[in-house]
Amino acid sequence: MMQKEVELDFLLEGFIDDALIEQCRDVTVNGLVQDNRKARSGNLFFAHQGYNTHGLLYAQDAVAKGVSVVLWDGDVENRDEILDSISNKVLCLHCDDLKYKVGPIASRYYDQPSLSLNTVGVTGTDGKTSIAHFLAQCLDAYDVHCGVLGTLGNGFINDLHPTGLTTVDALLVQKTLADIKQAGARHVVMEVSSHGLDQGRVSGVAFTTAVLSNMAADHLDYHGTLANYAAAKKRLFYTPGLGAAVINLDDEFGRTLAAEVRDHVCVWGYSQEKDVSAYKELADYFVNTQEIKPFERGYHLCVATPKGEVCFDLPLLGRFNVSNALAVLSTLLVSQFSLEHAVNSLSAIHSVDGRVEIIAEPDKPVVVVDYAHTEQGLSAVCRSMREHFTGDMWCVFGCGGDRDRSKRPLMAKAAEKYADRIIVTTDNPRHEDPQAIIDEVMSGFSSKDNVETILDRRQAIDIAISNAQPGDVVLLAGKGHETSQIVGDVHIAFDDRRVAREFLAAREAGVIA
Image 1 (spheres, helix red, strand yellow):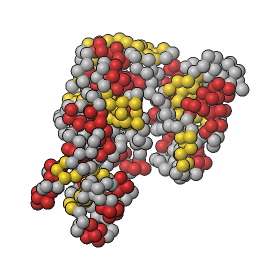
Image 2: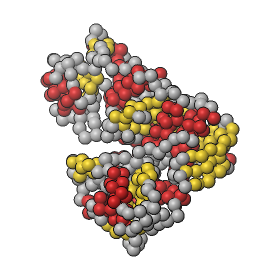
Image 3: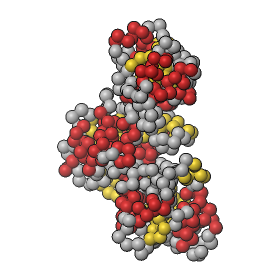
Image 4: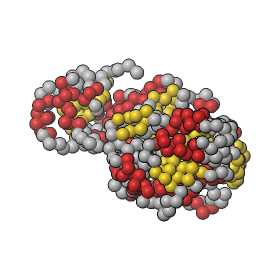
């Protein structure tokens, strides 16, 4: 997208005091920036409190690089000194609650792209990526090009550009939406993280539909309490102009949320329960299973919907993917797809990279790679493996460093409940001692008879695949699609899927190494 000149008073009208708008007349800016390293001549620089530091500390450098306007809020040491040093060089304007206004201002700059799209936001602890990608696959199947923003990257389903974040900053969100719109898309599906909601990264996005997958304890290192985490998730469902909420009624938080938001938005509730009469006060419409029959590579489902009952085969493993499929089906129906088209597209979807991704060779154990990194996620994928495989289940997992420590022993309890053999290993230790992380995980086991610890993740995968028998399943949990291990600040190349294929290839069919 070409850089363009936009009048400053148009961008800021309603966001700053009326008395300041007069200073904006006849001023134009040719770009928006929050990172001083990316500042260019003629840009508008946003300076507000970030997670670790305040943007005003970098304003002098941004001005030196040629920005023409600094929009700021908050307090920081030497604030007045900084403002005095730049106010005679560029226009400096105060804006309350700036972090929540960056998105709406950027939306104006990019001609409000989300208003021209069917914009679906997906939030929840687990399942965001799967729901977003399954939905995009279904929409693409009927030639209604669908953009994606999320954990695996931004762009289109077969042309994603990794960003390293589930929800990128507010400026990039709006620019990406504009690029997707310009490329001819009619729909966009966005994973919306609790961090992104709390930090205002999706402020200014006109969501058509909001989807909740589920809720479990996660990111408490950031939010502090489960109540704060839940409050962040709720923000999505109070987006001005939201048309519909698609909510998992099998989830306790989902039921609470549905009851709370039904007074201002149309609620579609989805459930794996055959009888949803107990939920009749929670939703306007229901999509729920009448029959769930597992087979080796998926499920046969019969589902009741407001548009009739339908039966079809879902080519995915895991009861959680049944729930994800119900979320997708509900959203397709909300988006005015016929039941026939919605079911036909669901019957043809494929698994998402690193989400219950099966690696199988004849007469060898089956390997399943999954991103499960919470107690709820690990429990769900382990439970599902029991439904599809009859042999022993091996579970190889670890916990990331510099992240919520409270979930470490809970992950152990989840694995212990379902797995026959468990290997606890490293995940992304970051700046923590890997052995100390493992020790905290180990504290959650009631018995360590079938548990071993192997610090080196590659060796742990080798041991599991070498010792598992044909008919067994080896679950590699926690990293999924990731292609590196983070040790300190260094990213070391490591992909569970590549490593698993290497050890499967090295193993003789039907023979225990």
